[in-house]
Length: 87
Image (cartoon, rainbow, N blue to C red; front, side, top):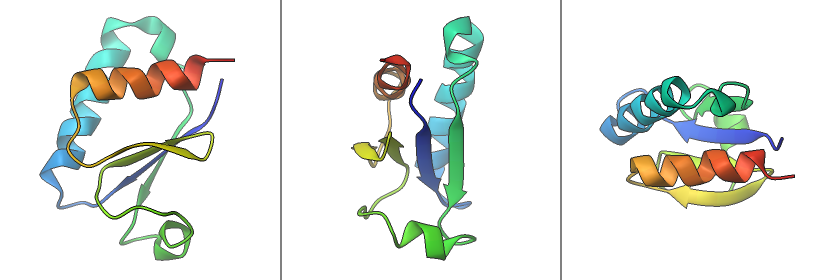
């Protein structure tokens, strides 16, 4: 399983939406329960955020490869989870 890094801000409505999609997907599909997701608030941890190349939040990296940046959808979050499960 590959690690997932997610960048967010506390005030971002799309981040809240993405987190909701993640919760829904985990409750609908048990195989997603064990995915290791490190959620980083770029305002609280700027030293980490500055090491990554992105502009919008939420942004997902899987195994340090950017998969998505910006407005999420349930399908996008599903694709991130599926990529994390690949060997």
